[in-house]
Image 1 (cartoon, rainbow, N blue to C red):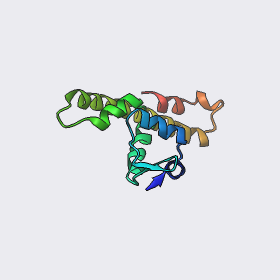
Image 2: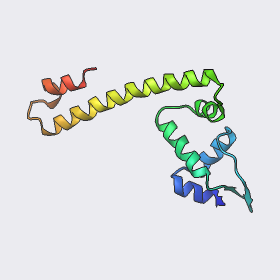
Image 3: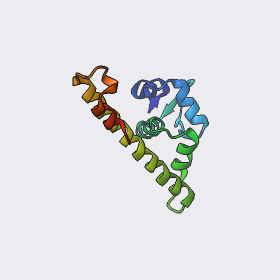
Length: 124
C-alpha cells in the first residue's frame, strides 16, 4: 500500500488534489495508516490517465463520466469522439506552431513574425 504522501510524491500532485479527486469520485483509498489515506499501487496508473486527461482539457466531471462509462453508454462515447476531434484540431495547431517556431529560430527576416514562411506555417 502507498500512503497519500508517497502517491503525491510519485505523481507530482499535491495531497489536496488527491483528496479532491477522491471527493469527486475519481479515486478510492484502500484504507488508512493512522490518519493518512492509503492507496493500492494501481492508483498510480489511474492518476496517470487522470493527469493526461486534465492536460488534454478534460474537466473533472468529464473524467468521472468516462471512468464510470460502459460499452452501452452512447452519450459518453459520443462525447469522447467529439473530444478526440477537438484534440486532433489542437494537435494540428500545435504542430503548426512548433514548425513555425523551428523556422523562426533560424530565420533572418526582420522582424521574425513578419516572415512570409513563418506566417504561412501558422495558417490553418
